[in-house]
Image 1 (cartoon, rainbow, N blue to C red):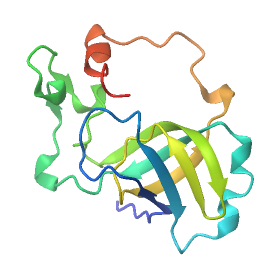
Image 2 (image 1 turned 60 degrees about the vertical axis):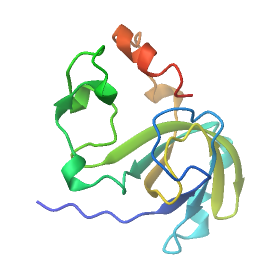
Image 3 (image 1 turned 45 degrees about the vertical axis):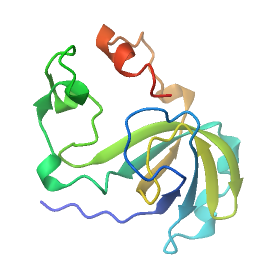
Length: 151
């Protein structure tokens, strides 16, 4: 089965290399692709947060992994790719919850998007409280260490 998707928008920011840390200061503009009508963003400013689905377009097929230590760090356990958020994924799909800063015509400005300049956006969804976890979110201790400089 083949699944075909087309970018609906593009990321514009000053991060040009896929570096793992220090994303907090990155402000991104997401600009609709010319194939998308402007009204696709109508009233999006009524939401404080959005989920951005994007494509890791700079990951080479040879870089895709199915298991390994997060960031190659020997202090972390070997994890399957679905137990980590590494960019070198089988389908190269990224997902990030962002804060909406502003909406202007065919673009939105967001904080906390860990996608580099030129990244294709596959979908934008508003965050509904009703879709956030109802129970406590748990994770292993190594995740907090890995993420200490991320944002």
